[in-house]
Image: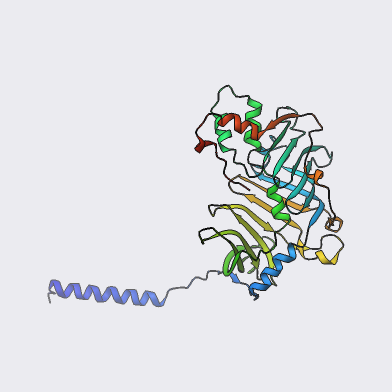
Length: 354
């Protein structure tokens, strides 16, 4: 018996469908591990705001810390490889004062000291690994933008090499970057706050990689702070992340610039007791500050949390570093004026920068 072309095609289609059906019955299902969804606690907006204000009760602090710099961290000090890890002594006081001393572990030799009084900053580089060319006393204004100065020096073939390197190293460094991390500003009733939630897949490096708790889905509350603008619009200023697992914990703070871009991304580690005062229990024992635009990250870990001194009052001069070492001085504001002299006004304006 001969089959027509159409009959042959119909038989082939039926055979193909039968084969697919039969093979489908024998498919072996492969298991894939999904992130473990962790139980998320509930909190109200008022409770989240109260937690921010609890952090803000710290008005001043003096502590010894382990400092770890990553990426371009110590390019600002001219000796990135030599001083990658260091000992630090930090004094902070509201509203925005800081003194930071950096020294080499074991031999306790000072590498750098820096201060900010909230308006200006000063940085003394005391040890650069031996060459001496980075040993400078640099001062400037916190909210100044020195990018035009950097460009001017980079394009000037006869510019002093040491000055050029100093400006490029320190123009983006602000001691103030760390005051916002250690002295969380309280809630401001003049601002607008909103709450949202997010779930994020994370790896817990403290767990065995084969553990079901290694890859988890963790829930967060996000408390966003908006400032009111003259035209009635709102602009984001801060975002607080609250870990919802096992309680409510302030885990992260992000600070935004005038364009809505992240200036500082601050991560708070596990909590413990600072000082021996029960009022300062459950505060972070480790703080990591990342400055995306400035291309560095610094981690600060309290060496002995119980020895941290909280609540003392320090005189204003503590936060204005003096050049007692007679180091060569680099005044960034003066260099900026010289670099922009005679240029159109549009190029001489300095943009606000925290």
